[in-house]
Amino acid sequence: MIRFYNGKLLRLKGGVSMTEHEVWVEGSRICYVGPKKDQMPDFEREIDLDGDVLMPGFKNAHTHTAMTFLRSYADDMPLNDWLFKQVFPMEAKLDGETVYDFTKLGIMEYLTSGITASFDMYYRNDDYVRANLDCGFRTVICSALNNFDADPTNIEREYLKFNNIHENISYMLGMHAEYTSGLERMEYMRSLLDKYKTPFFIHCSETKEEVDGCIERHGMTPPQLLDKLGLFNYGGGGYHCVWMTDEDIELFARKKLWAVTNPCSNLKLASGIAMVDKMLEAGVPMAIGTDGAASNNALDFFREMYLASVLQKVQNMDAAAGGAEKVLEMACVGGAQAMGINDADDIAEGKFADMIVIDLKRPNMRPLNNITKNIVYAGSKENVRLTMVAGKVLYENGEFFIGEEPEAIYERVEKHMQEFRK
Image (tube, rainbow, N blue to C red; front, side):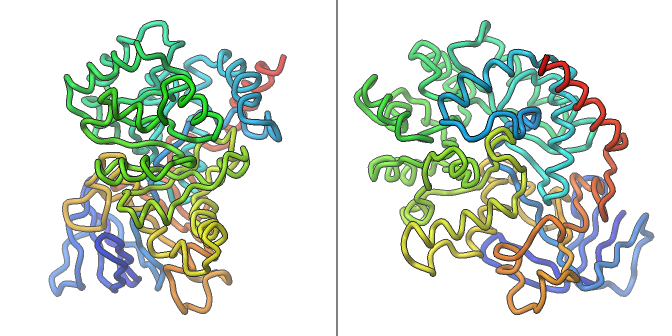
Protein backbone atom coordinates (compact mmCIF):
# COMPACT_ATOMS: atom_id res chain seq x y z
CA MET A 1 0.00 0.00 0.00
CA ILE A 2 1.23 3.52 -0.87
CA ARG A 3 0.33 6.65 1.08
CA PHE A 4 0.28 10.21 -0.29
CA TYR A 5 0.07 12.80 2.50
CA ASN A 6 0.90 16.37 3.55
CA GLY A 7 -0.22 17.97 0.29
CA LYS A 8 -3.11 19.43 -1.63
CA LEU A 9 -5.61 17.13 -3.33
CA LEU A 10 -7.07 18.66 -6.51
CA ARG A 11 -10.25 17.06 -7.82
CA LEU A 12 -12.10 18.17 -10.94
CA LYS A 13 -15.16 15.95 -11.36
CA GLY A 14 -18.28 17.98 -10.64
CA GLY A 15 -16.27 21.17 -10.29
CA VAL A 16 -12.88 22.16 -8.93
CA SER A 17 -12.21 21.29 -5.29
CA MET A 18 -9.05 21.43 -3.18
CA THR A 19 -8.56 19.64 0.12
CA GLU A 20 -5.67 18.39 2.23
CA HIS A 21 -6.94 14.82 2.27
CA GLU A 22 -4.63 11.84 2.13
CA VAL A 23 -4.82 9.27 -0.66
CA TRP A 24 -3.95 5.61 -0.20
CA VAL A 25 -3.31 3.20 -3.05
CA GLU A 26 -3.55 -0.57 -2.94
CA GLY A 27 -2.68 -2.51 -6.09
CA SER A 28 -3.89 -0.59 -9.12
CA ARG A 29 -6.66 1.33 -7.35
CA ILE A 30 -7.29 4.00 -4.77
CA CYS A 31 -8.46 2.50 -1.47
CA TYR A 32 -8.84 5.59 0.71
CA VAL A 33 -9.37 9.33 0.31
CA GLY A 34 -9.82 11.39 3.47
CA PRO A 35 -8.21 12.88 6.56
CA LYS A 36 -5.40 11.17 8.42
CA LYS A 37 -6.63 8.30 10.56
CA ASP A 38 -5.67 7.60 14.15
CA GLN A 39 -4.97 3.97 13.33
CA MET A 40 -2.67 3.69 10.32
CA PRO A 41 -1.91 0.48 8.40
CA ASP A 42 1.56 -0.59 7.36
CA PHE A 43 2.56 1.09 4.10
CA GLU A 44 4.99 -0.15 1.51
CA ARG A 45 5.84 3.46 0.80
CA GLU A 46 4.80 6.85 2.19
CA ILE A 47 5.16 9.83 -0.17
CA ASP A 48 5.39 13.19 1.57
CA LEU A 49 3.89 15.69 -0.89
CA ASP A 50 5.46 18.54 1.10
CA GLY A 51 2.66 20.90 0.10
CA ASP A 52 2.57 19.91 -3.58
CA VAL A 53 -0.56 19.02 -5.55
CA LEU A 54 -1.86 15.50 -6.13
CA MET A 55 -4.35 15.44 -9.01
CA PRO A 56 -5.77 13.13 -11.70
CA GLY A 57 -3.42 12.50 -14.59
CA PHE A 58 -4.01 14.12 -17.97
CA LYS A 59 -5.68 11.90 -20.58
CA ASN A 60 -4.34 12.27 -24.12
CA ALA A 61 -7.61 11.72 -25.98
CA HIS A 62 -6.16 11.61 -29.49
CA THR A 63 -2.68 10.61 -30.54
CA HIS A 64 -0.53 8.38 -32.75
CA THR A 65 2.18 7.45 -30.27
CA ALA A 66 4.67 5.67 -32.53
CA MET A 67 4.75 8.70 -34.83
CA THR A 68 7.56 9.98 -32.64
CA PHE A 69 9.71 8.60 -35.47
CA LEU A 70 8.56 11.50 -37.68
CA ARG A 71 9.18 14.26 -35.16
CA SER A 72 10.72 17.21 -37.05
CA TYR A 73 11.08 15.05 -40.17
CA ALA A 74 8.57 16.70 -42.51
CA ASP A 75 7.67 20.15 -41.24
CA ASP A 76 6.44 23.39 -42.78
CA MET A 77 4.31 21.67 -45.43
CA PRO A 78 0.60 21.78 -46.37
CA LEU A 79 -1.43 18.99 -44.76
CA ASN A 80 -2.06 16.90 -47.87
CA ASP A 81 1.57 17.09 -49.06
CA TRP A 82 2.77 16.30 -45.55
CA LEU A 83 0.42 13.31 -45.26
CA PHE A 84 0.56 11.74 -48.71
CA LYS A 85 4.12 12.63 -49.80
CA GLN A 86 6.00 12.28 -46.52
CA VAL A 87 4.07 10.50 -43.79
CA PHE A 88 2.51 7.59 -45.68
CA PRO A 89 5.74 6.62 -47.53
CA MET A 90 7.74 6.64 -44.30
CA GLU A 91 5.08 4.69 -42.42
CA ALA A 92 5.42 1.92 -44.99
CA LYS A 93 8.90 1.26 -43.54
CA LEU A 94 7.63 0.51 -40.05
CA ASP A 95 7.70 -3.01 -38.65
CA GLY A 96 6.82 -4.48 -35.27
CA GLU A 97 10.10 -3.71 -33.55
CA THR A 98 10.24 -0.11 -34.72
CA VAL A 99 6.65 0.51 -33.60
CA TYR A 100 7.55 -1.02 -30.23
CA ASP A 101 10.57 1.24 -29.73
CA PHE A 102 8.99 4.46 -30.98
CA THR A 103 5.95 3.76 -28.81
CA LYS A 104 8.19 3.47 -25.77
CA LEU A 105 9.76 6.81 -26.67
CA GLY A 106 6.29 8.37 -26.82
CA ILE A 107 5.28 6.87 -23.48
CA MET A 108 8.34 8.39 -21.86
CA GLU A 109 7.32 11.78 -23.14
CA TYR A 110 3.76 11.27 -21.91
CA LEU A 111 5.02 10.49 -18.43
CA THR A 112 7.12 13.65 -18.24
CA SER A 113 4.02 15.63 -19.21
CA GLY A 114 1.74 14.08 -16.57
CA ILE A 115 -0.21 12.02 -19.11
CA THR A 116 -1.48 8.75 -17.63
CA ALA A 117 -3.45 7.35 -20.58
CA SER A 118 -3.54 7.67 -24.35
CA PHE A 119 -6.26 7.20 -26.98
CA ASP A 120 -4.14 5.89 -29.81
CA MET A 121 -4.86 5.24 -33.49
CA TYR A 122 -2.06 3.56 -35.39
CA TYR A 123 -0.71 0.30 -36.82
CA ARG A 124 0.85 -2.97 -35.65
CA ASN A 125 -1.18 -3.06 -32.48
CA ASP A 126 0.36 -6.26 -31.12
CA ASP A 127 3.69 -4.50 -30.81
CA TYR A 128 2.06 -1.30 -29.65
CA VAL A 129 0.30 -3.17 -26.85
CA ARG A 130 3.52 -4.98 -25.93
CA ALA A 131 5.27 -1.62 -25.45
CA ASN A 132 2.48 -0.30 -23.23
CA LEU A 133 2.38 -3.43 -21.12
CA ASP A 134 6.17 -3.48 -20.73
CA CYS A 135 6.10 0.15 -19.57
CA GLY A 136 3.02 -0.25 -17.35
CA PHE A 137 1.13 2.46 -19.24
CA ARG A 138 -2.62 2.70 -19.87
CA THR A 139 -3.95 3.00 -23.41
CA VAL A 140 -7.15 2.78 -25.40
CA ILE A 141 -6.64 1.71 -29.01
CA CYS A 142 -8.93 3.05 -31.71
CA SER A 143 -9.04 1.06 -34.93
CA ALA A 144 -8.02 2.98 -38.05
CA LEU A 145 -10.09 1.21 -40.72
CA ASN A 146 -9.63 2.73 -44.19
CA ASN A 147 -9.48 1.81 -47.88
CA PHE A 148 -5.87 0.67 -47.62
CA ASP A 149 -6.47 -2.15 -45.13
CA ALA A 150 -5.82 -5.46 -46.84
CA ASP A 151 -8.00 -7.34 -44.37
CA PRO A 152 -10.74 -5.25 -42.75
CA THR A 153 -12.00 -8.25 -40.78
CA ASN A 154 -8.88 -7.96 -38.60
CA ILE A 155 -10.62 -5.06 -36.85
CA GLU A 156 -13.11 -7.40 -35.20
CA ARG A 157 -10.39 -9.82 -34.13
CA GLU A 158 -8.43 -6.97 -32.53
CA TYR A 159 -11.56 -5.67 -30.81
CA LEU A 160 -12.15 -9.02 -29.13
CA LYS A 161 -8.48 -9.65 -28.38
CA PHE A 162 -7.42 -6.34 -26.92
CA ASN A 163 -10.53 -5.82 -24.81
CA ASN A 164 -9.66 -8.99 -22.91
CA ILE A 165 -5.91 -8.82 -22.50
CA HIS A 166 -5.14 -6.55 -19.49
CA GLU A 167 -6.90 -3.91 -17.42
CA ASN A 168 -4.51 -1.26 -18.80
CA ILE A 169 -5.54 -2.03 -22.40
CA SER A 170 -8.85 -1.48 -24.16
CA TYR A 171 -10.02 -1.08 -27.75
CA MET A 172 -12.66 1.02 -29.51
CA LEU A 173 -13.96 0.85 -33.04
CA GLY A 174 -13.06 3.65 -35.41
CA MET A 175 -12.00 4.67 -38.90
CA HIS A 176 -9.16 6.88 -40.04
CA ALA A 177 -11.31 9.47 -41.86
CA GLU A 178 -14.12 9.87 -44.36
CA TYR A 179 -11.66 10.90 -47.10
CA THR A 180 -9.64 7.67 -46.73
CA SER A 181 -12.64 5.37 -46.41
CA GLY A 182 -15.22 4.38 -49.02
CA LEU A 183 -18.86 3.65 -48.34
CA GLU A 184 -18.24 -0.09 -48.45
CA ARG A 185 -15.78 0.11 -45.56
CA MET A 186 -18.15 2.43 -43.67
CA GLU A 187 -20.99 -0.04 -44.08
CA TYR A 188 -18.75 -2.82 -42.77
CA MET A 189 -17.91 -0.69 -39.75
CA ARG A 190 -21.62 -0.09 -39.20
CA SER A 191 -22.15 -3.87 -39.08
CA LEU A 192 -19.53 -4.18 -36.32
CA LEU A 193 -21.04 -1.31 -34.35
CA ASP A 194 -24.48 -2.89 -34.56
CA LYS A 195 -23.06 -6.23 -33.48
CA TYR A 196 -21.20 -4.93 -30.43
CA LYS A 197 -23.25 -1.76 -29.75
CA THR A 198 -20.16 0.26 -29.02
CA PRO A 199 -19.00 3.87 -29.61
CA PHE A 200 -17.27 4.96 -32.81
CA PHE A 201 -14.45 7.50 -33.31
CA ILE A 202 -12.91 9.08 -36.42
CA HIS A 203 -10.82 12.04 -37.64
CA CYS A 204 -13.62 14.48 -38.36
CA SER A 205 -13.81 17.90 -40.02
CA GLU A 206 -10.13 18.58 -39.45
CA THR A 207 -9.69 20.82 -42.50
CA LYS A 208 -11.88 22.92 -44.76
CA GLU A 209 -10.68 20.85 -47.71
CA GLU A 210 -11.90 17.67 -46.01
CA VAL A 211 -15.36 19.13 -45.39
CA ASP A 212 -15.65 20.59 -48.89
CA GLY A 213 -14.61 17.27 -50.41
CA CYS A 214 -17.17 15.35 -48.37
CA ILE A 215 -19.92 17.74 -49.44
CA GLU A 216 -18.84 17.31 -53.05
CA ARG A 217 -18.81 13.51 -52.76
CA HIS A 218 -21.89 12.97 -50.62
CA GLY A 219 -23.81 16.23 -50.42
CA MET A 220 -23.26 16.64 -46.68
CA THR A 221 -20.59 17.30 -44.08
CA PRO A 222 -18.61 14.44 -42.49
CA PRO A 223 -20.63 14.40 -39.21
CA GLN A 224 -23.90 14.39 -41.14
CA LEU A 225 -22.73 11.58 -43.44
CA LEU A 226 -21.44 9.46 -40.56
CA ASP A 227 -24.69 9.95 -38.68
CA LYS A 228 -26.80 9.10 -41.74
CA LEU A 229 -24.86 5.85 -42.13
CA GLY A 230 -25.58 4.96 -38.50
CA LEU A 231 -21.99 5.11 -37.31
CA PHE A 232 -22.89 7.29 -34.32
CA ASN A 233 -25.86 5.18 -33.19
CA TYR A 234 -24.00 4.08 -30.06
CA GLY A 235 -22.09 7.23 -29.29
CA GLY A 236 -18.43 8.06 -29.87
CA GLY A 237 -17.14 11.22 -31.46
CA GLY A 238 -14.58 12.91 -33.63
CA TYR A 239 -10.97 14.04 -33.47
CA HIS A 240 -10.16 17.68 -34.32
CA CYS A 241 -13.70 18.96 -35.16
CA VAL A 242 -12.37 22.27 -36.47
CA TRP A 243 -14.72 22.98 -39.37
CA MET A 244 -18.04 22.24 -37.71
CA THR A 245 -21.27 23.82 -38.97
CA ASP A 246 -24.05 24.81 -36.60
CA GLU A 247 -25.89 21.67 -37.70
CA ASP A 248 -22.82 19.55 -36.94
CA ILE A 249 -22.52 21.06 -33.48
CA GLU A 250 -26.21 20.46 -32.80
CA LEU A 251 -25.77 16.83 -33.88
CA PHE A 252 -22.81 16.31 -31.55
CA ALA A 253 -24.66 17.96 -28.67
CA ARG A 254 -27.88 16.01 -29.21
CA LYS A 255 -26.10 12.65 -29.42
CA LYS A 256 -23.51 13.55 -26.75
CA LEU A 257 -20.67 12.82 -29.15
CA TRP A 258 -17.19 13.73 -27.97
CA ALA A 259 -15.25 16.43 -29.76
CA VAL A 260 -11.52 16.03 -29.11
CA THR A 261 -9.62 19.23 -29.80
CA ASN A 262 -5.95 19.19 -30.84
CA PRO A 263 -4.87 22.84 -30.81
CA CYS A 264 -1.11 22.47 -31.39
CA SER A 265 -1.47 20.17 -34.39
CA ASN A 266 -4.27 22.25 -35.88
CA LEU A 267 -2.17 25.39 -35.64
CA LYS A 268 1.02 23.82 -36.96
CA LEU A 269 -0.76 22.32 -39.98
CA ALA A 270 -2.78 25.54 -40.48
CA SER A 271 -6.00 23.56 -40.20
CA GLY A 272 -7.79 26.20 -38.16
CA ILE A 273 -9.07 26.83 -34.63
CA ALA A 274 -11.82 24.63 -33.23
CA MET A 275 -14.83 26.45 -31.79
CA VAL A 276 -14.34 24.97 -28.34
CA ASP A 277 -16.43 27.46 -26.37
CA LYS A 278 -19.25 27.38 -28.89
CA MET A 279 -19.36 23.59 -28.74
CA LEU A 280 -19.24 23.59 -24.94
CA GLU A 281 -22.04 26.12 -24.74
CA ALA A 282 -24.12 23.95 -27.06
CA GLY A 283 -23.60 20.96 -24.76
CA VAL A 284 -20.95 19.05 -26.71
CA PRO A 285 -18.73 16.98 -24.37
CA MET A 286 -15.08 17.75 -25.00
CA ALA A 287 -11.59 16.40 -24.43
CA ILE A 288 -8.04 17.29 -25.49
CA GLY A 289 -5.38 15.41 -27.45
CA THR A 290 -1.88 16.06 -28.71
CA ASP A 291 -2.20 14.27 -32.07
CA GLY A 292 1.08 12.65 -33.17
CA ALA A 293 4.60 14.03 -32.81
CA ALA A 294 4.81 14.24 -36.61
CA SER A 295 2.38 17.15 -36.62
CA ASN A 296 2.88 18.75 -33.22
CA ASN A 297 5.93 18.09 -32.61
CA ALA A 298 5.81 17.67 -28.85
CA LEU A 299 3.58 15.43 -26.75
CA ASP A 300 3.21 18.16 -24.14
CA PHE A 301 -0.16 18.53 -22.44
CA PHE A 302 0.69 21.85 -20.86
CA ARG A 303 1.06 23.39 -24.33
CA GLU A 304 -2.24 21.83 -25.37
CA MET A 305 -4.13 23.18 -22.36
CA TYR A 306 -2.67 26.65 -22.70
CA LEU A 307 -3.53 26.87 -26.38
CA ALA A 308 -6.97 25.31 -25.90
CA SER A 309 -7.69 28.20 -23.57
CA VAL A 310 -6.03 31.23 -25.14
CA LEU A 311 -7.12 30.43 -28.70
CA GLN A 312 -10.72 30.74 -27.55
CA LYS A 313 -9.98 34.18 -26.17
CA VAL A 314 -8.65 35.33 -29.55
CA GLN A 315 -11.28 33.53 -31.60
CA ASN A 316 -14.11 35.06 -29.56
CA MET A 317 -12.30 38.36 -28.90
CA ASP A 318 -13.20 37.81 -25.26
CA ALA A 319 -10.59 37.42 -22.51
CA ALA A 320 -13.17 35.54 -20.44
CA ALA A 321 -13.46 32.74 -23.00
CA GLY A 322 -11.59 29.46 -22.64
CA GLY A 323 -11.80 29.28 -18.86
CA ALA A 324 -8.86 27.50 -17.23
CA GLU A 325 -10.98 25.34 -14.92
CA LYS A 326 -13.02 23.98 -17.83
CA VAL A 327 -9.90 23.27 -19.85
CA LEU A 328 -8.38 21.38 -16.92
CA GLU A 329 -11.58 19.37 -16.56
CA MET A 330 -11.45 18.52 -20.28
CA ALA A 331 -7.84 17.40 -19.88
CA CYS A 332 -8.48 15.05 -16.96
CA VAL A 333 -12.14 14.10 -16.61
CA GLY A 334 -13.32 14.64 -20.18
CA GLY A 335 -10.47 12.65 -21.67
CA ALA A 336 -11.09 9.67 -19.40
CA GLN A 337 -14.80 9.61 -20.17
CA ALA A 338 -14.28 10.03 -23.92
CA MET A 339 -11.91 7.06 -23.83
CA GLY A 340 -14.36 4.93 -21.89
CA ILE A 341 -12.08 4.61 -18.86
CA ASN A 342 -14.51 6.06 -16.33
CA ASP A 343 -12.58 4.40 -13.52
CA ALA A 344 -9.76 6.87 -14.21
CA ASP A 345 -11.78 10.11 -14.23
CA ASP A 346 -11.33 11.09 -10.57
CA ILE A 347 -9.37 10.55 -7.39
CA ALA A 348 -11.87 8.56 -5.37
CA GLU A 349 -12.05 5.24 -3.61
CA GLY A 350 -12.27 2.38 -6.10
CA LYS A 351 -10.90 4.41 -9.02
CA PHE A 352 -7.67 3.58 -10.80
CA ALA A 353 -4.62 5.16 -9.18
CA ASP A 354 -3.70 7.20 -12.27
CA MET A 355 -2.37 10.34 -10.63
CA ILE A 356 0.31 12.99 -10.90
CA VAL A 357 2.10 15.26 -8.47
CA ILE A 358 2.55 18.90 -9.49
CA ASP A 359 5.56 20.59 -7.90
CA LEU A 360 4.55 23.96 -6.50
CA LYS A 361 8.07 24.76 -5.37
CA ARG A 362 9.06 26.14 -8.75
CA PRO A 363 9.09 29.85 -9.63
CA ASN A 364 6.39 29.51 -12.31
CA MET A 365 3.92 28.26 -9.67
CA ARG A 366 4.36 31.16 -7.25
CA PRO A 367 2.64 33.00 -5.75
CA LEU A 368 -0.23 30.59 -5.08
CA ASN A 369 -2.97 33.00 -6.06
CA ASN A 370 -4.88 30.33 -8.00
CA ILE A 371 -3.36 26.88 -8.41
CA THR A 372 -5.67 25.61 -11.15
CA LYS A 373 -5.05 28.69 -13.27
CA ASN A 374 -1.33 28.40 -12.60
CA ILE A 375 -1.36 24.85 -13.98
CA VAL A 376 -3.08 25.88 -17.22
CA TYR A 377 -1.54 29.29 -17.83
CA ALA A 378 1.91 28.97 -16.24
CA GLY A 379 2.49 25.24 -15.83
CA SER A 380 5.08 23.23 -17.71
CA LYS A 381 6.62 19.78 -17.71
CA GLU A 382 9.15 20.97 -15.12
CA ASN A 383 6.28 20.90 -12.62
CA VAL A 384 5.57 17.18 -13.04
CA ARG A 385 7.23 15.65 -10.00
CA LEU A 386 5.65 12.20 -10.24
CA THR A 387 3.43 10.20 -12.61
CA MET A 388 1.63 7.08 -11.39
CA VAL A 389 -0.36 4.69 -13.59
CA ALA A 390 -2.40 1.83 -12.13
CA GLY A 391 -0.76 2.27 -8.75
CA LYS A 392 2.81 2.13 -10.05
CA VAL A 393 5.20 5.09 -10.10
CA LEU A 394 6.51 5.20 -13.68
CA TYR A 395 8.24 8.59 -13.49
CA GLU A 396 9.57 10.51 -10.51
CA ASN A 397 11.98 13.41 -10.18
CA GLY A 398 13.30 12.98 -13.70
CA GLU A 399 13.75 9.20 -13.50
CA PHE A 400 11.80 6.58 -15.46
CA PHE A 401 10.66 3.24 -14.05
CA ILE A 402 9.50 1.49 -17.22
CA GLY A 403 11.63 -1.64 -17.29
CA GLU A 404 14.73 -0.32 -19.08
CA GLU A 405 17.01 2.68 -19.16
CA PRO A 406 16.13 5.63 -21.43
CA GLU A 407 19.55 5.51 -23.12
CA ALA A 408 18.80 2.05 -24.51
CA ILE A 409 15.58 3.32 -26.09
CA TYR A 410 17.29 6.42 -27.49
CA GLU A 411 20.01 4.28 -29.04
CA ARG A 412 17.53 1.99 -30.78
CA VAL A 413 15.32 4.75 -32.18
CA GLU A 414 18.30 6.62 -33.60
CA LYS A 415 19.48 3.42 -35.25
CA HIS A 416 16.02 2.87 -36.75
CA MET A 417 15.97 6.37 -38.21
CA GLN A 418 19.38 5.93 -39.77
CA GLU A 419 18.00 2.90 -41.60
CA PHE A 420 14.79 4.73 -42.61
CA ARG A 421 16.72 7.63 -44.11
CA LYS A 422 18.83 5.45 -46.40
